[in-house]
Length: 137
Image (tube, rainbow, N blue to C red; front, side):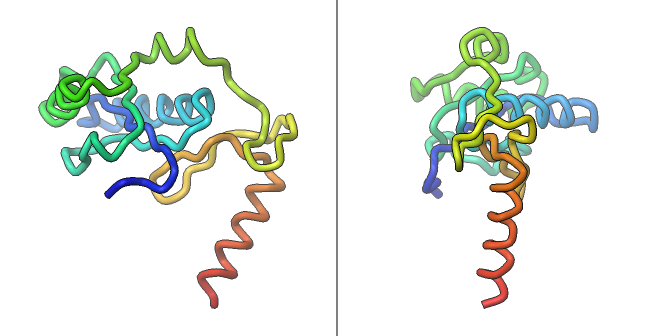
């Protein structure tokens, strides 16, 4: 399944609640800094070809499924970066990707397991209302 908007896959060990929490935080950072959608890879249900790039957490070799996905991404010569490269190269944003305003409320939002690029509270609320109206129709 190819995504309509670019999505980054965050790969690492998800075997414990703590490691999954760490990867979730990394996906939040990736969505914010790259201004792209980000998904945490849990299990091997992902095809790396469906993603714009990969962020490899240092724990990726501690999990068989993460190691397989990470190796596939490198084998395909995808854009692969470490959290260190992500943080050194890309600044956090406080600009809403919808309205462009710089607001303290602008942050990635989790929708259906995918982190969105940063969105301010007003745009997030308007988007949620739009989605609920679309589902009601």
